[in-house]
Length: 271
Image 1 (cartoon, rainbow, N blue to C red):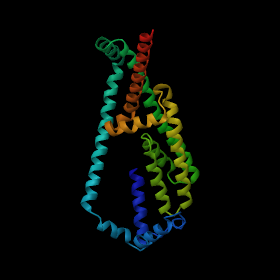
Image 2: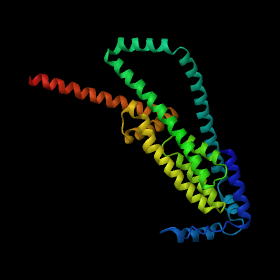
Image 3: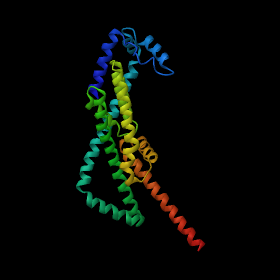
């Protein structure tokens, strides 16, 4: 990502010396094409326009944004490393810990809770597997699509797309950035083709692969899986991508169990 960002900035700086010409396809866009082309011609088409805009930007705000992004990335990297360390010890003592935890829960909350633990374990595995499968699918499929569209460094962009696609809808950011880079470089056909192919790949990953991979474990429709991933990510960060669908699976299981208990009590009273 750093290499691609540096390359994009170098291309922008080189183009700004001559003035960034209006792309020929921009005026043909429906509804807003003419207005966008006029704005481009006014603000970006003359030499040095981008540099002037950058000089008028608030340096403190840009520095603050960069610092916030750096702290966020460092924080998430620390969480990933700490999680790997904890997982090593959990797997090392996994069986004994699982048995002790099951006995403790059964003692304090009853035998029915053991079934809930089974549901939670099954949903957790399905949620994690679906996230990894979607990331791998989007990375490989987008790499093939980018190569077919003639994108430079297709493998790098495919890896970026697959990594971001772990979070629903975040992979589209990589697709848009790639299309913008190609459009600025003058490769309008490659930009349009890579954009549409990338969107199709991500759409298949989110709408088909993710629900199919998680269906047996979570038994949730796509909308519930999507709400669980996004809501969990908002509350818990990266861990919430896995925990969110698990919580909704448990909620659904408790709801169905309660509905069965109410129905059996009603039938018993009627008898």
